[in-house]
Image (cartoon, rainbow, N blue to C red; front, side, top):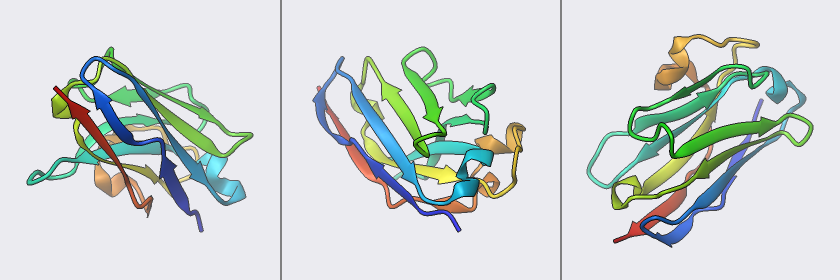
Length: 128
């Protein structure tokens, strides 16, 4: 079992930055890929970014490419999402998720079905 807890959300002005953290329990976490998804009011949850177990492969949605960076520290069981140049359209609840397929690094990480464990979410609000 893996439990995930997001933190770091908040209110920021457009153009600003935030860093989200996803802290995990469980020793097997370091073998799992982790993704970030977001859900804006009235919209479906969408993929943001993902990182494989060794941090050698990352995926980004086109909407965040060049502005967001995902990273992980397996010694701390934590994945980070650095968000720069934030826009009002980035406003959403951000969720981290972990797969339960050890060492998987493929394109399924862009999809919700690629993940088994989910955090409770953290709100990010970007004002214009």
